[in-house]
Length: 344
Image (cartoon, rainbow, N blue to C red; front, side, top):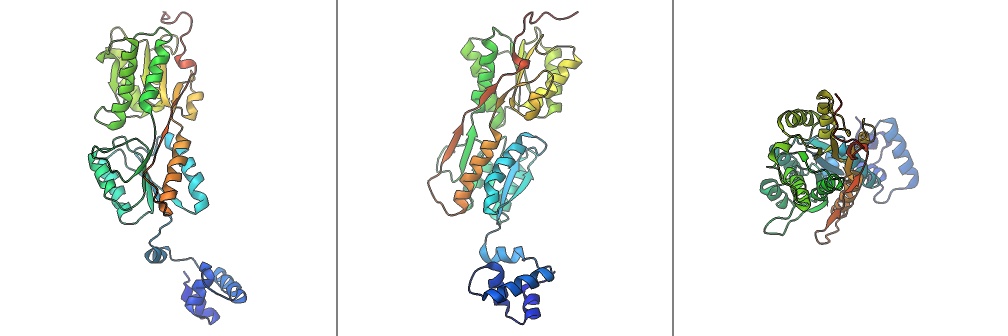
């Protein structure tokens, strides 16, 4: 691959002249600049990004970490992020942390080593360990969930949707139709996201004066297979069974639908169901799935805007953005006439 020295030798000019012409910085005669650009094309010249980074300490890369690359929820976030980053020439690097703390720590270390200029981080469990590492960084970071350290003085921004309220809205939707036996399939309660969404379920029941029944609650892993297994377990093991189930994301709701089909339980004729994320597929399932919109594209766009400000030297005070969820009601959660009368 050609270098600026090859171009300089070919044209009989100095390497510094070639550098000024190609970078557009510093004086260079227009005729000379045109000759250099033409020679660069003929020699298939490509700039040495590693050398450029060593000189400028800028990579023009942004790291985006997600706990599950296969979850389509993050596709809309990526769209929103790229809408903001593209005009600035930033390259988005996607990293799958597989919901493992060690992988999250590796991403933080990459940022510490200047692999990227900033990071947008999604995690199911922001905790003292990963937050402590983030607060010791001297690089811009935006989280996509709320976190406030007990001692305060956090150095990151965050943009978040109140998923706790989203699940609570699902429970309210069920109880408004006279439903009293409401089940829940969510993430692990040891993790921040799992706890928050479970609290929305618990608060919704409490608000309606309904008891919390362990037989109607299952923990899963936010995957379709996890929702399927949780569904089989719940439908096999609870007596009486729930009349409605709130799932903490759409993928688990899809799996739960599959379990219902296998157990010959009709949705919504025998059981009402709702999810969260409002994936595009939820409008095409049978029945169409009620879901809570978490405004993924707007999360990505807002997070990227915050990050760009920081990467471009805007040292405004730490700011955070709160987005409200929206319940999108479809046929899976609407109580039909004759509800609960099983076919024989």
